[in-house]
Length: 56
Image: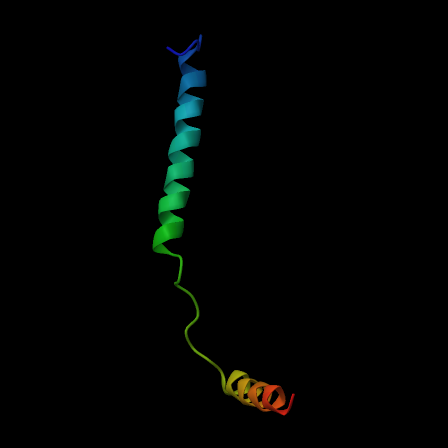
């Protein structure tokens, strides 16, 4: 089996590949999930930032 002498070594390779695929799938589904609430302080900062950029 691909030059592997022991079934435990083959299992380790299979589990590494499976865990990588699982992480990639999880990352795809959880890509844009995050904090959606915006605080009042953030809103104030954004307004001040826009004003500062317009003055430049």
